[in-house]
Image 1 (tube, rainbow, N blue to C red):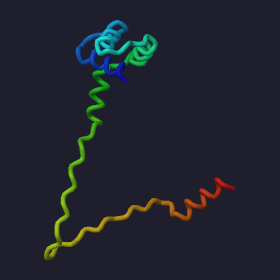
Image 2: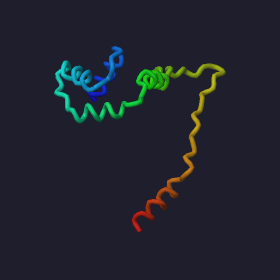
Image 3: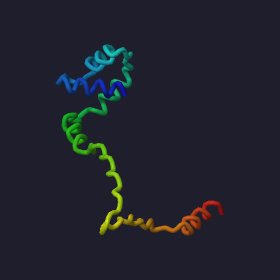
Image 4: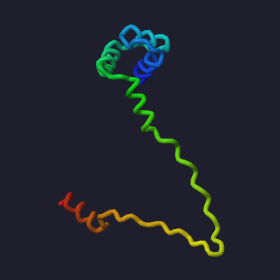
Length: 104
């Protein structure tokens, strides 16, 4: 994982991501770089625009869900909301029949 972080750091600094630079970042972080892993990462990043990939990743990142509002006490004229159960499409009996086929 530190190899990927090193590549991201180089990208954020606007530096080229190559053997020497990535090995330098890893060494500065106290990691002894493995040449095979460095080459494998560089090969997987070849032709990839990291800025574009990171921009797309930011659009997919969902914000943390907000806390659920506290339930209100029922007052005059207020109706309690009922939760709808979703039909899963397969009953427990049908699922059990499918499992019995596995065991002969």
